[in-house]
Image 1 (cartoon, rainbow, N blue to C red):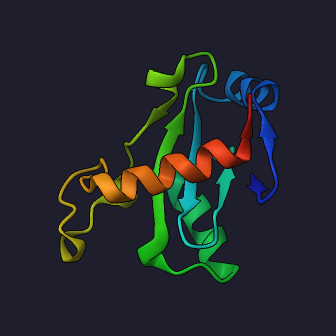
Image 2: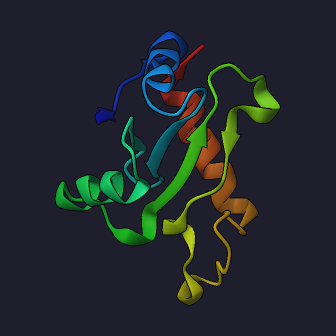
Length: 113
């Protein structure tokens, strides 16, 4: 597991993806602190790490990164931790366009392409 608070390269993400999921890297993004954790088997493990280090649940969203994909397929909004009926998010995706935009902004800031 790696905390990304400055930057991570596509090459680093590719190495991570080849070790575990063959093409994808799980990540949890804190849209308030503008950080993310990558490279764990479960989004829940990354979420716990961030919660233990000061993040608030409301700001955490699970995604998958595909370092071999182009812009359109690079980020996948899919995680069990995203199911939050109290926030009107009833799917594993991120239903709010505003929150998706915040996630994309954090990822684009932290991932050096």
